[in-house]
Image (cartoon, rainbow, N blue to C red; front, side):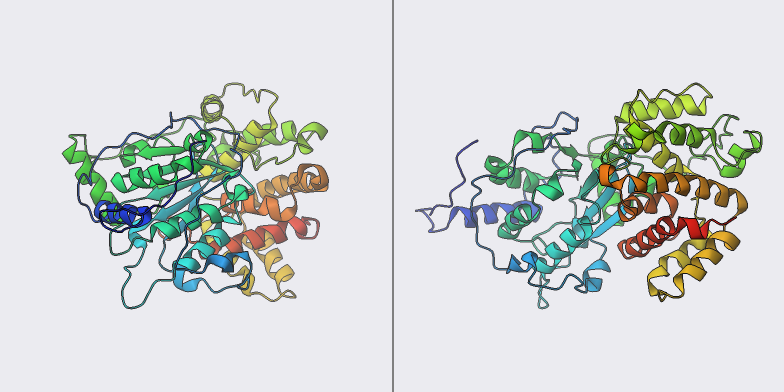
Length: 453
């Protein structure tokens, strides 16, 4: 490892190294210099390293103005984050092409530092509070850098404290960090922290200079991209003489072939499957996974799989060709989640979304009755049959939670956003994640009392 970064005094101006670097960052964040530079990833070759580096060793100590000791439990777990949540700085938006949960951070939504000082320490607690729900499974992080200015950027000291706050449990399952529209600010910060960051973590970082590049890894339709980020991307495309997508061209309507399952509706699949409400790929995945070896696989449904393999199997499935899981339970698990995520309408229909997100407001005595009404009476028959089939299988996964570590709550975190999605016009908010997961957890826990037909 390189020698530790040591803040020293500048004899010329009497400034510490940290202060000089802060000044450089100030110029970079304010747009001075090459604000629209195209940057190459520092060490990334576009691949994702599955094994995580050792914990940070001998890191430089930088004092911070904010008291971040509260992260160790000084504040109550149930701190009210509504004021930060409504800013939309952090969003959980869906899954990437490998089936990993995607968390988006938008710098442009950071409020300016003015008379009412923004509580960056609380923001950090909110970030850890949000990630706590997802760090036990593979996840990806997208950072929209555009919009970070001298008026709203946090201090260098805060950035360092943030890096230290996200310890191994947060970094272990982070499989991809997409830095979108990077500038010299990113380059300078990278150089500052580089002595304490291993090459393995660097391989998880990818500089994304245009949104079209991000689309290779994540479906942009599920992202809530700020308008100013979209406009900035268009300016970059024009400046660098790349083709700017236009929305004026008519979109061709493609009629799926009869064997299509991924991205189709349940009704379409049923009509092309001898009126069987259980899609063939779901039955294949469940039958493959419903064996002792697969059921006892630690972290089943949490781990991701090779993107190219998953895409190839999706294509073969949609063409009606045989699907080979290559004796890998994680491939079958990812395919099952992907099928649910890509259904034309979620299994728990859009019509039920508002009622599901109000689950936490129900009293404990009221919950069993309301959930039964929702599942038995309001859910379409085909949806009910498929949901019952999947949940009863997952109950057998839970029966082996001592080996696979997949309790009802862990499975709810994984399946909640795949079974329940917000209507396209609404978008999934962080405030809805908790109620959705609690509803699905309740469904899994009491499945034998709910699915009585």
